[in-house]
Length: 321
Ligand SMILES: NC(=O)c1ccc[n+]([C@@H]2O[C@H](COP(=O)([O-])OP(=O)(O)OC[C@H]3O[C@@H](n4cnc5c(N)ncnc54)[C@H](O)[C@@H]3O)[C@@H](O)[C@H]2O)c1
Image (cartoon, rainbow, N blue to C red; front, side, top):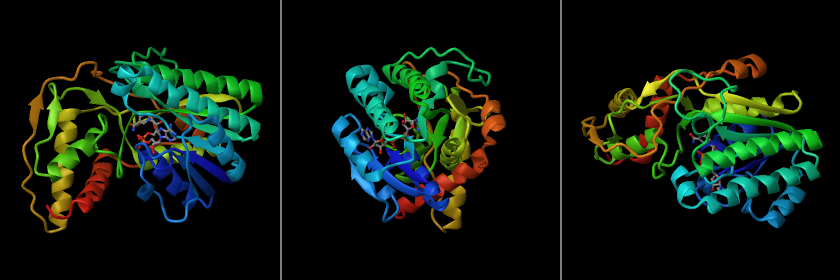
């Protein structure tokens, strides 16, 4: 199989690339490196630096690569930037998506996988919700993800492109950017390793469905290999809720264990509390019954194990502490 991964130099995309290679697939990456990094990619992967909002550049990459399948991870991923600059968000997340979909249809690509988002589509939910939950996005980022799903439905109907939207929970793992606004695990780890206290915004009782990046990448590969026609949307999470207080304490334990194993100092700064962030959801949980039934996917990495793997990766990046 020949696969084009857009956004493949990013956090989730680079894990998708790794798993595609491990499965013996041919992979090429298109990325503008706006948040992604070349060093996230294994040596030798064909790389095309291109902006998905540039239709001609997208066409050129499709002509050279001739992909049979597309995993479209490229997106502007900041919710707050989407609020400040909805046009900038739509440029990558609506127009860019359309360019890649159009090229996929023209080049007779067989399947197309698109990351959507459970959190931004469903809003505040205290029980795991299925894909039937009505979408009610409040940010331009959420609106563009919902629009993306509608475009996929259109391309599936009009061109017979097999399309899957994966509605991720809160993805965490190695290579997540600790400078972003999301990615609490990466942000806390970076601060702890720099000897700075992690800051919990609000009371720490916000609940999320944390899912390990390798499990998310595997869901992408299963969606790509599925022979189910038309458009499908699946939640990709664990169905388990963890609040930020609990997450912080599990993460601290995981990091202490890693540092002890490496014979390093384990005295980590205590957590501090700051004001709540306006607009943060209180709770977001995903029911994963549909993807279990239809694609045979389920998460394999527990939160404890995933946090330990992530802590080990970040600790390896900060060896001096
Ligand atoms: N991380 C999460 O918890 C989460 C949750 C829901 C959905 N998602 C979605 O998953 C996908 C991957 O996100 P991530 O967390 O790996 O973020 P990321 O920022 O690490 O990855 C995005 C990648 O896309 C590239 N990119 C951005 N704009 C581009 C453009 N115009 N042209 C070409 N490349 C471009 C970036 O350089 C980067 O490599 C995104 O579509 C995001 O919306 C992520």
